[in-house]
Amino acid sequence: MQRIEWKNLNIDPSEVYRRIGMPDADSKRSQNFKPYVEQMRLKALGLIEVRCIYDYVPVKVSGSEEILLANQYPVKAATSFFEGAAEVLIAIQTIGFRLEEESARLFEVNEMLDGMVLDGCGTVALDEALELLRGMVVKDVSARGLQTGHNLCPGGYQIPLEAQKTIFALLDGGEIGVTLGESLVMSPVKSHTLVIPVGQKLSKPNLSCAITCEMCVDQQNCSHSRLKFGKPKPLATDGEKRNT
Image (cartoon, rainbow, N blue to C red; front, side, top):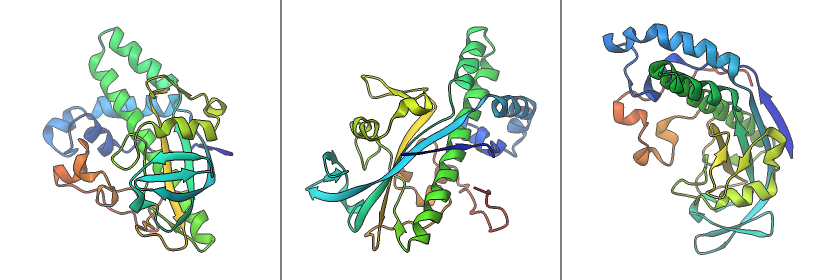
């Protein structure tokens, strides 16, 4: 198991607008919220503590709609994403409690707008951390002459939420302050788990470091999809990619 912390997040304002239900960051209505967004963005950057633990474990397709992780944990899954995989990257990542607590405090004192925008900033921070993690994994896997698959998250259409138990059995979430409740919801709330298939020749490879709606396997079922707003996230050029 390995641990990493991300310090170079940006919290893209246009993504914050999308997360608070205002997808057109350039509209007059959105511009009226610009001072709130910038104020809460800067506050969020001072509150987030992005930590991640991860590992690579063996995987194989063990039955109809079932995979076997680490040679001992059967997990229901859409097996087509794992065909050709010899291992998977599993990870737990969080931005910590501090932003969550401040957002809750703002709501309690009826600062609803600030609380909503700060919460949106936290979601964007977690999204950006996910992209940094994927970039690191793609670079590592490519250097070994292997392919990466799609980002798959428990609770999505490819892996049921019950897979959280297996990931927490294989990784010590307490190492980064993340716990799993009986309802399989993580605490802090702004946390996520991740599975990425890795293999020599995957049936469904995804070699991109970027995370865009066009590349997401849940694009048609996501309430925040950029595709629904007609403004897909542009791919970064080599000079624009974040330094991981």
